[in-house]
Image 1 (cartoon, one colour):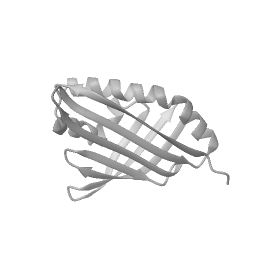
Image 2 (tube, helix red, strand yellow):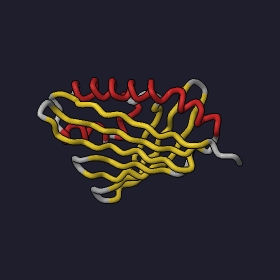
Image 3 (cartoon, rainbow, N blue to C red):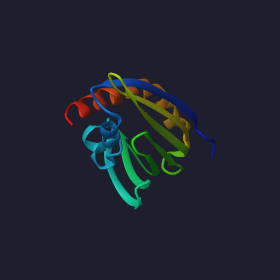
Image 4 (cartoon, rainbow, N blue to C red):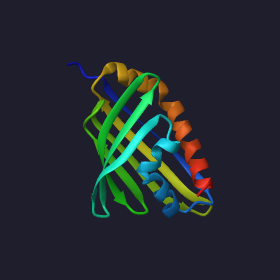
Length: 147
């Protein structure tokens, strides 16, 4: 099968009046993702590996398209989270959250890299990632404002 190719990207933002511990709690609250992460239909923690890591099952959808995958989340409380997966729509996937205190709040840096199994999904992802990045920043702003 011909592969779909890769996608790399990310964003960085400062969230005022939020400390890294509070932001970490929002980002590591995988069970709540369907309530605020764009396109997330289901998310549940399958297994806990002590306080350091989790195995998480997630389902995303856009229109009639649905895809699920399992990832391993390594928690570096409160400095960040690293997620990796190699099932579902990708050969490999990595998402890194880095959190740092700022005088005005919390600096969040999100970086991702994905190698898709399908060129069709890779193409659709490339077209929609800038908008998805913008939506994630907006929903995080709303989520931390209500915490």
